Length: 173
Image 1: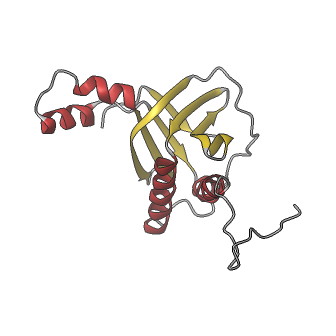
Image 2: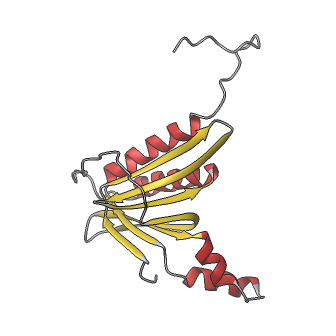
């Protein structure tokens, strides 16, 4: 795998967000390492797939247990060092650092790598050789928190299900 254009190393925060009102929301994943901030926009299905893949990785890997998490601040001031639409992503685990790896590729770079190549297989290979846009290392706790928050972000925009009699249940909160 080629070196990332932006190697964030061990990050302080990693979180999913939804911007907008239900039915008209945009989704993004935020990375923060000190004052360096990256924002990757994605579809709701991509966010769900990322969360599921992270959960699978956690269940397949025993590493990272007991490693302390950085203290999150929730602050992501703009401008972002990196802001892009998500293309591919890759996940892994680094035994040396006892941290999990996240590689994100932006859609624009992947599209540019495919340009001018007529054969679909060759175009896919060219896109796969492109350098990741961002590389980040995260703790097990950060991944567990991300998985939980992603589920809440995705579910928060869904309408309440009607009760069996067809009425939406009253919720005073």
